[in-house]
Length: 155
Image (cartoon, rainbow, N blue to C red):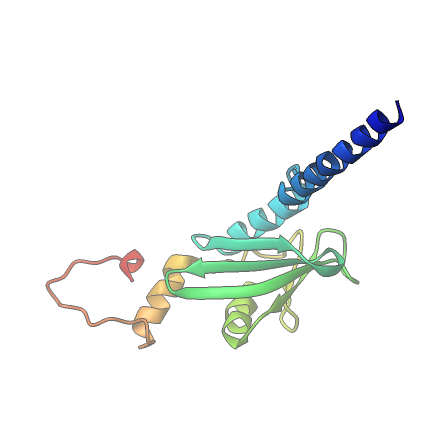
């Protein structure tokens, strides 16, 4: 009887190794993240027409967001509350371009903040951003043939 028990024990080691390998290889199932969905929805309200290419939960309840409009990209973090009221967020831009654009939609004149109930609705539409880059002589501007038909979305 003893040899059979030893044989079973040795046969169980590869089985346990296979289970461990499978557990480490398979992705962890997750359910929907309501807070992240709210963040993406808020970004769509503030930046209509912009495509949110990445939104991830970050440190201390914050979120990292990347939104694109044509060749333009806005990268920023949204940090909820931290001294603000419930539902209000600090906006932390990644670069000067993002800072200049997000300042236009900030609910505060001095700080980059989005209030849950803003005093006035401010937004930066993708279409207006594309038109601005077309007329500012930015590097993404292309030479236009006067006979060519185009829309701001072609840029």
